[in-house]
Every structure is written in structure tokens, then in C-alpha cells.
Length: 289
Image (tube, rainbow, N blue to C red):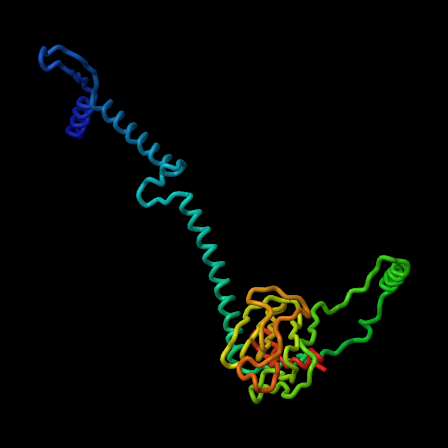
């Protein structure tokens, strides 16, 4: 124990012993600078300097833009740009998928290579039959009073205008005799009509022309995209009056009847109607005669 106490006292003396740091002029040995210190002071100053440097470095890394110059750290602007590019690339990817699906639908229209799906305007998707309680259909007294109040207000409303429930109507592209009806089983996805030469072929509804060119199989072909994913197709035309990219209105002439493949053959129009990449029987929606 005595030896340990002696060692501690000796170490304490060494730490507290004063020393002098002298800077001399090499030529004249004149004292330029001197400083009294001991090992304890040197240790304390060194520790405080190290703590100060660590604190300053931590502050720069955590709270200042200088951290972007430290290897491994990216700038805030670079991260924001990367995020914006990721969002844009995701949006472009969705647009490309939609365009590919649309191009696939147009390709099916031109080739007729598809699986048949039947559409019928009078068809109803059968669901499970539900028992309706007639008592639930009886209006309450408050509902009757509200209905009577609305009737009285509408009775003298001179500004009331009736609006049709259907906002999309298809008009006949031509008026003619159907010589070959729509038959999906035989892969005849069009209604073929006999026409007189140069009969105007009109758009069945407002839309945008997505294809208007000559094809070796059907001569001049026009494809118009309408709302709700509907495509109207006019094949075997004699000439075109519109070009791809044009916007047309209902009843606007897009082509003239004729036979651009064999002028001596009969003049017909092959009219097709498509919904979301599947053919529809046009006679269910359009009266051609």
C-alpha cells in the first residue's frame, strides 16, 4: 500500500511540476518566447481541443450544406432531383403501358386476330337474387313532404331544362343495305354494306383519327378513337378526306366510298365497332337503313 501511495504521489508531482517552454533565436540565442506549463495543463488543453474539434465536425456534418463535400454524403439538390426523376420515370412507365395497350388494340383491329368476347347492349350481368322487402320501399312522411315541396318549386321554374341521360350517341356512317352481317364465329367482325361510288362515309361520333392510310388487304382504312375506349373502323374506302391526327365531329365526312384495290369490283364499306380491344356488333347500336 505504501508503494502504491508513493507511486501516486510521484505521478502527481510529475503532472504538476512546472516546466518552461522557451523559443530561442538560433543565431543570437536570444529568448523570443517562453511559456510556463505542466503536463496536467497540456493534457487538459489537448482534451478540450479534441472535444471542440469533434463538436465542430459534428455540427458541420449535421446542420450545414458543407456535408455534401464529405465522401459518402449526397447533396440535397441531388436527392431532390433523383426523387423528381423517379416520379417522372414512373409516370412515363404508366403512359408507355397505356400506349402499348392502345397500340395492341389498334393492331387487333387491323388484323382481326383476337379472342371473341360478346357484347350486347341488352345483356345484364346476372347477380345473386336479392329479396326486396316492399316495406322498405314505402316513403316516409318527411320524404313525401320533401317530394311535394320540390314538385311545387319545379312547377313554376321557367329555367328548368331537361337533359338527356345518354351523352354518347352513335350515328350511321352511311345509309345502305347490309349484304354481310356481323358474325364473330366466322371471324367476320364487320358489317358490310353495299354503296354507290363516292358515297360520303361519315364519322359515327366525335373523336380523333388514329389511323388513316392505304392497306393491301382493305384499301383505304380509317380508325377513329372516341370516348369510353370506343374505336370505329371504316375499311375498303375509295379515298380519304382526313388524315391521321385530325379531330372530327359526329357526321363529318372522313372518306369516300370506292374500291382502291380492284376498281372493277363491287363497292362496299366494311364498318367495325370496338370497345376496349374487343369487337361489338354495330347493328346493336346503329340503324344503317
